[in-house]
Image (cartoon, rainbow, N blue to C red):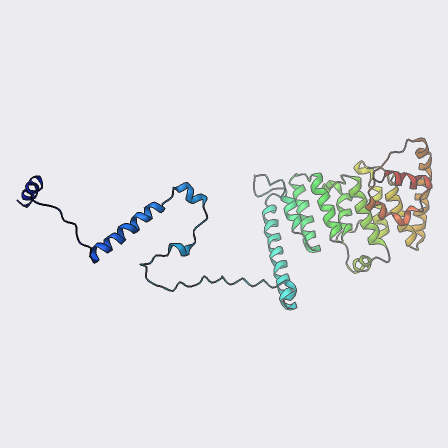
Length: 336
């Protein structure tokens, strides 16, 4: 009814719309409307906002949010550096080293037990061992007792009709040299049918001969230590015989004779001159005669050229002056 009266009055112009007088409510409404309009006018496209400078957090403060004290972010405590081993007491270091030795020996026993299944004339398993089985056990050998156990393992390995490859043989000889027991390596290569260990290269043979020569020198610190410790299975009766036996085994492994190798000859001559013994002087004289016989082959060019490293030349530096001039010149020319 009211709507119909208003529509009739507006058509007949009997009613007129008067302006609402200014009041507090109207002012508030204008402020609200004006603020909304200005905010819409200030709105910029999205791509312009991204290109402009970044707004700080202070420009977008919420006026109606409750005032709360925001805690300042605290830095996490920096971890204290771990103390070095040198700062530990000596007793603690000894305890840790003892635990390391015990753990390593325990791993050695476990590895030896797993390999023992494949050894012997009647192995307890029909499966084949891994290719690196012996090398894994060799890496854990760090004492003479463990080395003896490893040698027994090689015997069982050979009884099962298994072979020792050349790389493993070189590692075994190197391990014996590093542990200070070159006589064990000499025992392995001297009895090849039993152990199956070969000298694969002239460098390995020179390294073994150098270790035996150093072991046989009277001034060597290892000579006095080995005198009180009886070797496991001595091949010869003296350390001098060990060195000359190792040199005599060169042709057995298809290596050149010691008289044609200046490095090996120089090491043997140096050892013979350092020992005040009639037998040593006799062997030195015999070796010199063999070296003198090589001069004709060197002059004619029929002698083979053998490679020698600087380290190997340093092994025979003392005895190099005892060689004939032709052999000394040849050894210098071979060095690369």
